[in-house]
Amino acid sequence: MSSLIAFAESFWALTIIKIGLLLIIVMTVNAYLTWFERKVVALMQSRVGPHRVGPHGLLQPAADGLKFLFKEDAMPAGVDKFVYLLAPFLALTLALASLAVIPFGPKPLPFKYFGNHIDLWITNPDIGLLVLFSITALGVYGVALAGWASNSKYPLLGSLRSSAQMVSYELSMTMSVVGVLLMANSFSLTDIISRQDSSRHGLLDWNIIGFFHGGFTQIVGFLCFFISAIAETNRVPFDLPEAESELVAGFHTEYSSFKFAMFFIAEYTSMITVSSLCAILFFGGWNSPFPSAPIWNFTHYLPSLILLPFGLWVIYDGLKYETIFGKVILPGMGTAIAALGAALVVFPTVNEYIQAPFWLLAKIFFFLFFYVWARGTLPRFRYDQLMNIGWKLLLPVSIANVIITAGFVLFRSIP
Amino acid sequence: MSPALLIFFVLAALAVIGALSLILQKHPIHSALSLIVVMVSLAGLYLLLGAEFVAAVQIIVYGGAIMVLFVFVIMLLNAEEEEHTDFSKLAKFGGLPLALALTGLLAAAMVHHAGSVPNATNPDALANTSSISMMLFSTFVYPFELTSFLILVAIMGALVLAQREKS
Image (cartoon, rainbow over all chains, first blue to last red; front, top):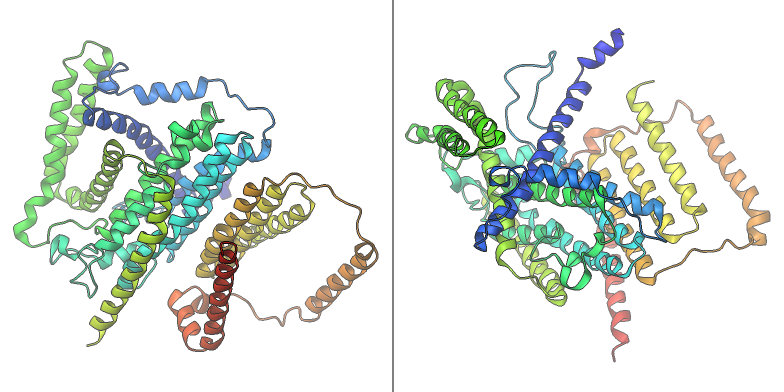
């Protein structure tokens, strides 16, 4: 009994709690990311988007989740059972595992868990970025094995395409961040962020400009990274593995019910990971885009400035509905959001603390929007174009970026 | 039993089981998957020794790049299940004694040096990426450059072989 209590108070228990919390949060965000994507794409195409289930279609993700659970779980004849079942598990676990090394804020929470600091990350290894790349390297298997095990021609073609695509783009993705690593002199994500400390020049201190910290602009590196990352996550315009006009649904054609949902969740989770990486590596992570001079202090109230009107609008909007969800829950949520915004004004220490996570989350949200934006606007590439872009454009350009950045870092480090 | 020792035994068992399954599986894809298990558990063992960089590189290079190529080729060739033939005579009569001899030799060496073997944990030298690169570019610069040269030659060879088909 005493050893149980000792465990419950230990660092291990804290980590398990944090993992559980992060899982719940990420799953919710994933669910509403599908809603967000459908709404934004609908707006771009002058449609309404989901609006039947709940106000603004807000309960659509819940309905979809239930649907996934209750659908018949069909397994095609002649599949390699073990590999067929392993593939979605691999895809989902690897996608979720990569979130463990993403840091969400610099300072531990102001209170302690039985004497343990509560940091805003699950783990912060010295080789954080390498861990992420090794998880990406293994991520190919989920897609490749799914297509192979399905015993069907379209999935096989889809997974062959995607293995080739992911292997090709992994190279340029890895090469494009070397510039950032050279400037930060570390693989640790927290080091990379603190290197872009924006207290003096604001957003000019970020790696995307990169000039003030003895480096060179990483805008080329960022473009290479983001394009390759979109290809790695199999999203439009690089979604050839599941090109529905040619391959039905690509590698997950033969997966139904919750196994399909697992691939779906894996895809959206890796979108979140890539967006966080873009924010962390090139856009200053949790550093605010404004310098810390007193003249900029008003920007500390930006979270309240967003939360307060948004909460009031949700209350106003909810009262227009006649259903219980609209009449009760929406105004309730609105009150909570508005109260949070007001509380941040009243308690400056809390406001100070949430600045860093706020900026990181805002940047992650921006890149998620960018994903959806790309999906709403760009047509799919042809396969030979895709290979040409990867090998003949992105790889040479990112290698050139490494050489130029290395030259600048070396030149500027000479006193 | 300390947690580290427990993790060591789990990983070591995984590596051995993976290696056995690599040989015993009939389907090439299953064998390739078993090899991935071996690679990843080896990476875990490196991590346990404090060699973070080596562990990550082990997964990226072996677990990722090389094994993806294996799986890719097996998928492309659409390899079927293989039938186990009768063991060759050499394996039957030479294999078991040789395996026993090797195991005996290793066991004898381990027993003989028990206690006097230096601890492999050396986090300062291995974990730090910059110290690894310092070693690569100073003490071991010749082997490093020679290996790079060898790889370059191999790439050129592959290119030449692939090109000859066309002309």
